[in-house]
Length: 109
Image (tube, rainbow, N blue to C red; front, side, top):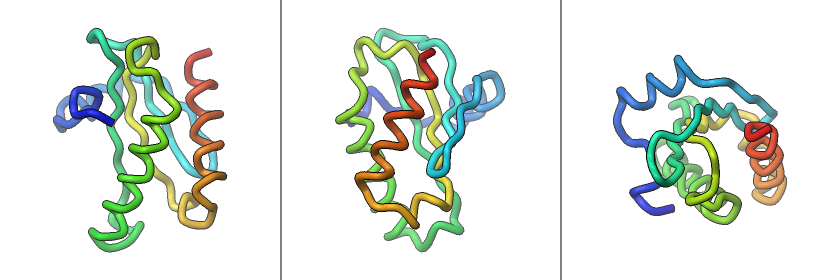
């Protein structure tokens, strides 16, 4: 996922979380609003309870790759914040990717 497609500022995270609609499943929570720029942007967040810094960075890299595979950033209609839940660790990569795909489709409807 390119840096242009990421939400990185704390103020933008807070704005999207407080004003966005919420979609939930076992592995993720997705707050989304209509996109503000030419390309969709996604922010990824997870709790310190998920593990140490090495484990959290690994999970974020995995989720970025899932987003890169599943989202066409030029045509996706929303900006969003993706919060990884603790249930992510109990499922395999493929199952989490399917969960994310279902969640992204649910969010656009």
